[in-house]
Structure formats: structure tokens, C-alpha cells
Length: 388
Ligand SMILES: *Cc1c(COP(=O)(O)O)cnc(C)c1O
Image (cartoon, rainbow, N blue to C red; front, side, top):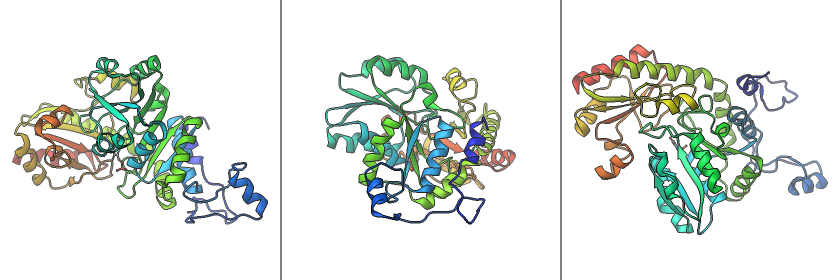
């Protein structure tokens, strides 16, 4: 078996005496030992035996092993949500007096962690423009420890050159931490471009069916050891039930993402030039500002398409109300297509200037393209545009 997808599908918890074909679910909070000596050895880290599900669990380990196969990383630790993975990655490597350099357009709760909670621990930050990597070097300080970024960014779909980020980080000896949620590992592997830490919200495309929350931090063994020690004591560990769901989902990830991306490409092409739209953005449309970088580091354009309605905020509200099939939901990465209007919802509390700084224009619509027939997705959007 050479291909990572085959390896992933065939990586599985060791079969029990029942000879089950599918993985069993280990819903147990703790594990037992035959004797005092085995128990002592486990606690002394001399064996890899499971002790307690806050530390490790077979279903969780299977999910992590499969993610390592996809991302090409040595180790990982799975968490209860994407946010706990992100927080754990900060708390494991940053301390009082350190500085974090992050790209400005990041997931909303990540922004809250960086601006509201990290300062409580004496960790400062600067934001840099995702679209202009040449400006990042000037933002590096003597106490900078980590560069944090998303690519593609949410929801502006900016693409950051992972190779250029690694070069910059090497010059100053910084850790590179990449939230790879939007691309998924079947589309982009940041570790192959030198990222030290790769993070996912498994809640999105990895589950892909809108069922459970989950997250993971992946990287070299020595780094993940730190994440493990932090999580083992503080407790944001992934539930074995969610791990069982997520691990099963990974078996179909490549097939699903291929279809999400081909549906999204079709939608982006068909909507381009529509008279009610001022622009359509998709990483694999040749007019995307970072098209060349997307072609270099991504295998496809992903499942998110954005466009700008000519009529601004009011047109955005009308458009959502006119949709018949697409769901109105803040989530993304589902079999069902979802439309969202950040200016009136997720980013409604920001001022217009703050929104524009992270690429959220008044009429911006984000479509998470699902697995429905591509013609049906397009037609629902076209009829809603007619009425908007
Ligand atoms: C949703 C999301 C997160 C947070 O993940 P949760 O599982 O909701 O905690 C982090 N980063 C990105 C890019 C996301 O889309």
C-alpha cells in the first residue's frame, strides 16, 4: 500500500476476539491493569497502555493516526473542538512575554482568544495582512515565537504562500502554526511546506456531515508531546464517540472533497460575470489574486465560493431570505450547501471599517458548497439573485 488514502482506510484499531470488520467503539473513561507492576509501568510512561480517556483512547488514537497519514506528520493530539486545538497549540508553546504574529483574517473565535485571553497571560500579538506577505517581516519582534495563519482564509479566501512563510520563520527561528481547516489534508499538506504545527477543526469538512465537534493538533513528536502534556492535565480531550464518527468520516474524505471542489468550481464559473454580482472569488478561478500560489500548494480549490452582491447589506439579507434549498447556517463543510452573510451575522458586531480590514464587504456571501447536484445548487442561487 503506497497511497496515503489506502493506508488511511486500512489503518484501524486492532481487531478484538469478536472479529468485527468495522471498528468497535471504546466508550470507557478508564482502563484496567492485570497487576500492580503493569499499572506502575504505564504511569511511569514505560509502556503505551491506555490509562484514562483524558490521556488516550483507542478510537481517538485511530483518528489521530489516520490524520497523521493524511498530513504526513509524526504525531497528533485530538481535542474536543477546533478551538480547543488552537488554544492548546498557543498554551503549549507561548509564555508570558512572548509575541505571536498572526494573519489578520482568521476565524472569529481565534481572534477572540488572541485579543482577549492571550493578553491575560502576558502574550502579545500583531496582525499582518494575508494578501501581502512582504509586510510580515516588519511585524516580527525580538520576542516573536510563532507565526499563526489560515489558508485559505475565512471568509475572504485569501491564499498565503506556505513556502514563503517557512523561509521567513527560518530566518528568525519561529514556529509556524497553520489552521488547515478550509483546505483539508487531501487538498493541502502544510507540513510538506515546513509547517511545525497543523491544526484542524474536525467539525467542518473532516466530519463533513454536520454531526459532531472535534479538533486536532499535528506535528513532530517532540512538539506534540508538549500539546499532550498540556491537554492531559487541562482536559480538552476528544470524546471517543466523536472520534469514532470522525475516524469513519475520514474514509470518505477524498471522495467527498473531490465532489465538493468540482461542484464549487462549477458554481464559481457559472456565477462569474452575473450582472447582480460585483465579483466572484474561488482559489482556482484564474482571476483570484493569489491564483498562482493556490495552484502551487493546493490540489483543488476547496469547497467554499464567495461573491459580492451589488446591493450591499440589504441585498445580502434579501438573498438569504430568497433561497429555497440552501441552508442558512453559520457552519460550513456539510453535505448540504450553506449560505451565510458575514456582515449581518458572524461579523455583525464589528464596525464597517473593522469588517473591511478582514475582507468582509457589505454584500459578501459565503457559500459552503455541498454534495447536492451542482445544477440544483446553481439554480437555487440564480433564482434568489433574480429576486434580490
Ligand atoms: C470552525 C473553525 C474553527 C473552530 O472550530 P470548532 O470546531 O468550531 O471549535 C477554527 N478555524 C476555522 C478556520 C474554522 O472554520
